[in-house]
Image (cartoon, rainbow, N blue to C red; front, side, top):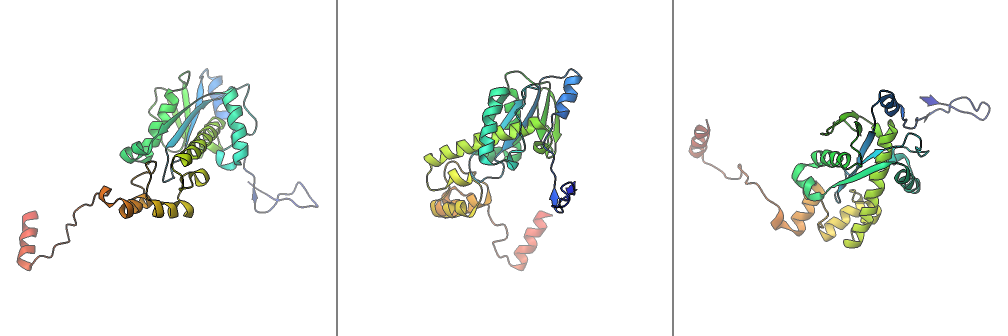
Length: 252
């Protein structure tokens, strides 16, 4: 809803400012009233980067001790995310799972992410009776699952999982920066910002890069051409009219 506000009338909405409601515990509470518990929220961090794993988290909040201020991790400052991370760890049950660059290369980013999310749910101390997951795709879990588009801004359990996943991955990328200096992982966390693209072009891919993402492929072609498989160009040869007719006839 658009709300305007002026100095003369504080109650009047401010033009152009969109009020965004924080995620709520409403969906979890509705299940609790039906006797369904535990209820988990899950989300991942790191689908878009060129390097590093996808980190998935599953969280079961304590209905009596939900930390104040939980929100979609993207709406929070790094400092606030760290604070809420610690509060969630102290008051909730949670689990984290990782999809490595090798798995991403093998399965593709979507399948690897869904695999990690399901692994996080399965690693919870107690298997939930119901799961809410951010996005369009349900998970392959033993319990019921609802996919909620934009769920990290709607369902507070998903928002809590987004914080756990994001902070865990940021910390991991800072550690990888020590292992592979020069790429700037500590600042951009593996995303395709100009600093990272320049380092890729200068240094070539590291073991932590995702092999089949386009900028990484370009860097491999420059620095490690023997690792790039090239399919034969079926149209590279020039045939005479008679040869072309024979090829076409053979294919019909």
